[in-house]
Length: 254
Image 1 (cartoon, one colour):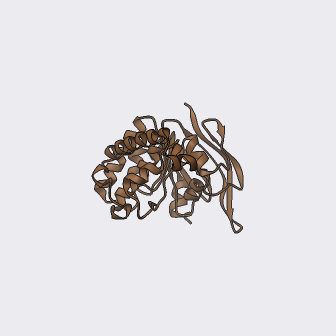
Image 2 (cartoon, rainbow, N blue to C red; image 1 turned 90 degrees about the horizontal axis):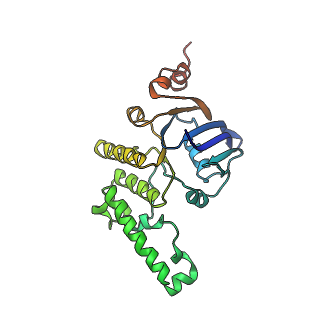
Image 3 (spheres, one colour; image 1 turned 60 degrees about the horizontal axis):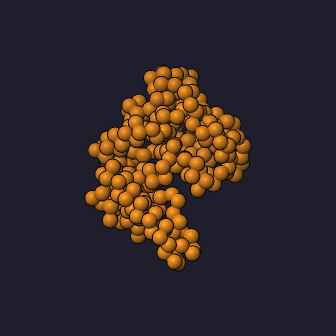
């Protein structure tokens, strides 16, 4: 068992309110880990800190044995960790193809001189990324809308574009924040199948999701958060039967 991500003592507060109160968790390489908990447990805040959107107040993060605590988002993407958001984001005027290309790594054409001169190396890399983007679109069944603007897509298709952009970065670990939220049942099943296939190809996944049937089907282990920290971890049935978990979701009985 190899740890891909290790978090110790993670804390974060906003305006004096403690949201993360000392998170300790590990994600094993090759797993699909579910991150669940009641609203306000700190799940999305944890993702925001892990992905560099917010700096932590305290704690340590190791990615593949490397200390990445407080690293910027671009540095984390290069290190192999990519995340999605609850609300699929994008540039309204850009097509699906252009969104995928944006996440392609090692683009020499982004340099000022290469952009002005149009170097051979930059053109070759652009061709390689174009082929890669087309392959990703075909894999996610987005090739029929590849030239459409992001605003013309359904909610489920936007979620697939988010996954596609992550794949363009060649990730070791993908953090998915509610990838099924607002998606119709047909596309939900399709996204679930894609996640299983990506995991079979060696990509480690950690996802926040409120659909417990999907968590049970996809995830092992399941980590439950409450009040800004990890409450318990285990198989789905094990955590579902845990009294502390039941009280966190339903309240304490008197």
